[in-house]
Length: 303
Image 1 (cartoon, helix red, strand yellow):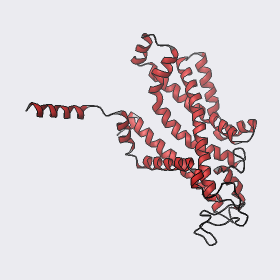
Image 2 (tube, rainbow, N blue to C red):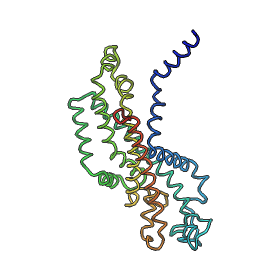
Image 3 (cartoon, helix red, strand yellow):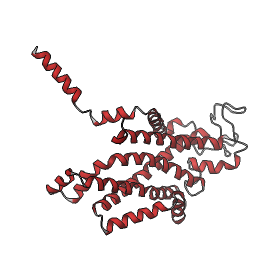
Image 4 (cartoon, one colour):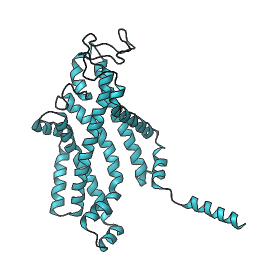
């Protein structure tokens, strides 16, 4: 009888114990089927980007002069050597799309990393120093937000010069205000809580208070914004490439591929449609996953 009571008591305690954070997060996240589909697609894109050299049947810049504007395999005149056809210079579309995934994922990662790091530092500074310094930082962020994002990126690239690195830097400046404002709002909310006051009473320094005590409790909205900002980074970089201000030929970047093939839209639909579908699918995947992360990380939206 005593053993049965002990087992029953242990079972009750397990049922009453709060779930682990990762287990609870995954339970809410998997309820959103769109988010799961977005996560699967992003994992596939990451795999394609990492193993692009293995998966691509041809080098992305190699030209096959005997196969100019060859149609995809399912159309008359197509063949299995060029599954998705070729462009006007005889370059394999499938290989260029695969390597373009590597460029786009790299661009998104660098842009979000730069924007997140600088935005978090500015937001923490504005939150902990609400006086003249904090006001100056937030008014500068408001000024950046008042400008259309693509126009601001074009201005920055026009000043720095066209190129993939300058395009990434320009888009980082575009997404920076969102991280700064979000961090400041979360910091102001957290500073009024008792655990921050207790940490201050123990003699914690300013940097420890900012980066060890407060910042970890502000990460949930930042993670969601970083995921949604990833799609913005890819889309804006592709737009700059389409305008000739981003990656320069022969770099296999999706926006640049669209710009180079625009004149063949009536003769060869695949050279325009396929890069556009790649951009659309990638942006949609990150938006779906961002919505799922928001639902799983925001206590007000949990069902």
